[in-house]
Each structure stands twice: as structure tokens, then as C-alpha cells.
Image (cartoon, rainbow, N blue to C red; front, top):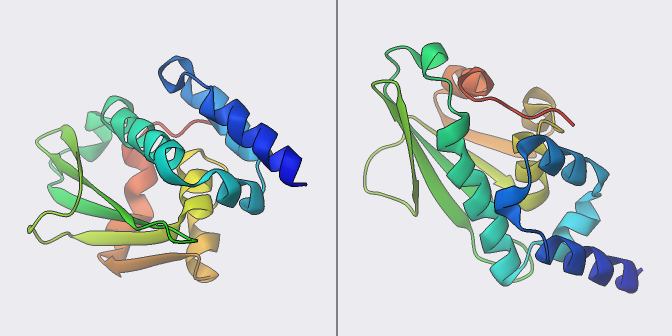
Length: 159
């Protein structure tokens, strides 16, 4: 089992994330169990995966769906086994989505809090946000209505 996790970790670590389409990434995530995600969600690999996902949010943003929305959305991806929390912010304003790493002093309209496995499942279209919320795998602080509609502002890949 550990050898399988090591092989998987090596396979994912060797990926050129820039050349992997959102749909391909969704298919990769769909194959992973929460335990396998936990095995690879460490250190530099975790940072690379999160940076690539958040980097793509600006390109997958659908300005026509956002209209005049002005909102700061904070994402807190909780780390396990000694990994720190990763915090990113997406600011939607004037038909533009801007993503920054780290927590600003600005007040967010909504904060989404979840573990690595839940985050990867959610952003790859492999997880149901309502189910995650109802089972407390996704926690929200702030505007629940905004959080409920977030998926319409982004092109979410399908596996």
C-alpha cells in the first residue's frame, strides 16, 4: 500500500501541471481516494498543486455570469499531518477575478474552509458542495448564498 502511494506521489510529482488540461486534472482527481490525496498533500507538491489550481481560476472565470458582483472570497485549505493551512483569496470585481496567495486584512464576504481532499474534489467537479456542506466537510463563514452560487462563476471541469 505504501508503495502504491509512493508510486502515485511520484507520478503526480512528475506531472507538468501547466500542460494538464482542467478535464485531465479532474479525471486524475476522480481516481484518487481521500487517503491517496492525503499521501500526496505534503510540502512542495501540495504547494504546486494549489498554486496551479488557484492560478487557473482567473482563466476559468466567467465574467458574464458575475455581472456587477463585488466580493472577496477567502479559501482556507486545512493541512493535515503537520502541514499548515493554505489561504488564498479570489476577488471578483468589475468582471475580473483576481487571485492572491495569503490572507489580506480585507474582510471577506465568505470564507470556505475544507481539507485538501475536499478542496481537490470540489474544484475538479468531483464533489458536491451541498453534500460537503451538509456533512460538515465544507464549512462556510459569511454569505452562504454567495457560496452556493460560486460554481456558476467558473468553468468547472467535468471528469
